[in-house]
Length: 233
Length: 204
Image (cartoon, rainbow over all chains, first blue to last red; front, top):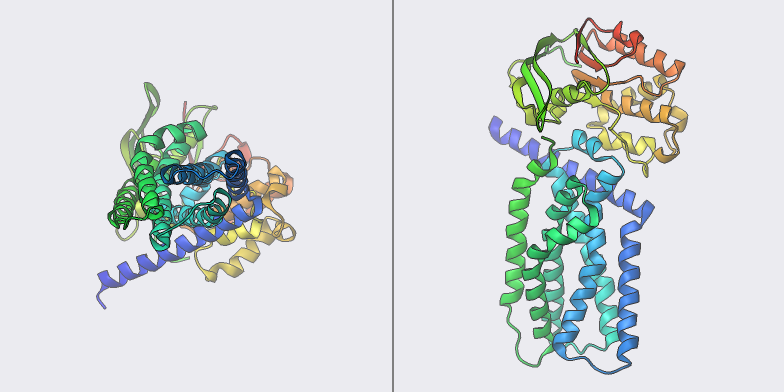
């Protein structure tokens, strides 16, 4: 094996090791405080049950069901998704993290953490919503794919925005404002894709592909630009 | 610790925050076995200078280089520099040992870890959550985290903050031993710590 190949293999294994250690640390800290998960699950439960009780058993149109599902998913997740970076600034640990790990390993681990968090929220909220609101899912596979791809896109888009908001010290309000233009197309397509799974007509798979491609694009750009957000000037 | 000799070179360093000039034209060089003390009143830029040396902050002008057999690129400095300062906070929701394991780069430093824990008197507190540490214990942990991976360059910002007499003694005996094998740059206004350095620069 040539020296260059050997060095690049060593760098790769160090990156993987660092990502795993960051993830272990983030899950340990989150497990001990349970801040993000508690808020997200409580919000999702309260809103879903409130919608169900207010409707009083009357069925909503398919488009409205789809909109409500994404409103619940989106707002349940938002606080937790921002929390992963905001916590580092709030607790004053960001400098410690910066001197300990490379920017790439930090970004990738926070991205994975947010994807897992979003998956947990999706897994808890979606069946709850389907049950309490009485959603009739016709194309089950397309429905599941829409929820997964939409959640993936939301987590991919909000991770770099959370880093920006945390570095700017703006916390919640700034995060919500800067995420609006980026998340608008994601929510739009997710709602339309989910509505397609609730209709009789055969759904289009293009919406799911768009969401996955959008996530890939945002993630690639974010990995390249993250070091400029993360390092002090 | 390898026998490689390093040189930390600083040339015409300047830092400006908006229109406020913090310092300019700072030049010096320190080799392995040398130490430098940065002193000056509060707000004179000691911590900023140390952050620039540690590669955490970019200067407005000038350059910092760390040379061994070949120049080390700034992206690789993290592996060669041990830095601590008042704003380096370990994770409150992790134990002292978990914070140390997070920083530890290789299992080869396990025996060094035991000796550092003993030296800084943290062995019996290693399994406590850091949020239950006193400020002096947190400072001892910060020092252990900075020196744990045996970096050839140590950049220490106010290392004696919050330490009691025992802690200060442990710090000065550690620095006394380390300065023969490393480059040490420390910012302080403590006369006791200034004496540990071979040279000094004053800001402000």
